[in-house]
Length: 243
Image (cartoon, rainbow, N blue to C red):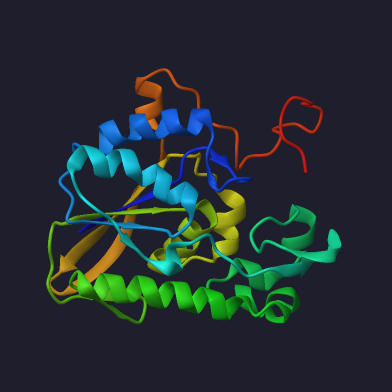
């Protein structure tokens, strides 16, 4: 079984939709996804993800099921560099999150004082429970750190969602701390991440990520990747995004 995790196109957060560039990105994305036989499509309830799915769904004459837990990961916390207000869980300064050893462990990352104060694990558990219910419906039942292939198959499903949420899904499937994924990876807008089961012993499946943040559909059309979700490569690069 394959899961294609699609990040929405370049967003216009002020209207929860896409920029002009974002709309072009998702048209190119649709050309690619329409060629892939797909068992089911699922989408976040947020506008930017639903707009990303529209060109693909129109091309294939299908609909997508809206899943509430596919929305962007929502668990505000008090971070050291922004003490006066709560902010997103996934964007910390390296000097603030890396000194905490627990953040690097898949079974401890949520135990740091900041995460505990924000009750982040509750939101995380809600998301992964939704994921496991979905996978059970497609034939794969979670058992410990792997999945029981109850009804193994070669189906492909597509999830239209968001970067931080994508990292939560991957952290559960691959048993990795989401902190390492939130801060060590970057999936550009309209990118496609592929995870596929390996059933090397009958009935026992593990997920392997075969590609992350693929934007070959943009390269094919000479469309540059959006810089959104990234920060300046060097601090003195004034034309690149800073805090």
